[in-house]
Length: 81
Ligand SMILES: [Zn+2]
Image 1 (cartoon, rainbow, N blue to C red):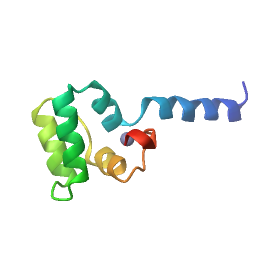
Image 2: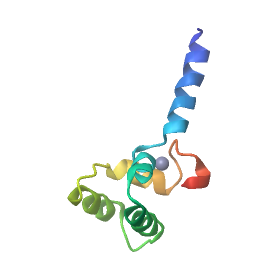
Image 3: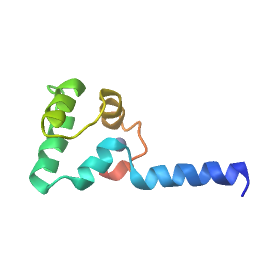
């Protein structure tokens, strides 16, 4: 495999998995998922506020990952972001 192929595969793998927030959304029970999605589109919730709440529930997500996901600047499929 060439380096170019390996890099393309790397991107494809990342895309299908999504970022930490995307993976968490996939793993959360429905009510939690809805609450998180709602909080992320509500500007009243800062990224640190959301990550603190997630941490309190045992979910580790960095502020950086949270910010990137809210901006859609992450590997998640954009339709489900
Ligand atoms: Zn994401």
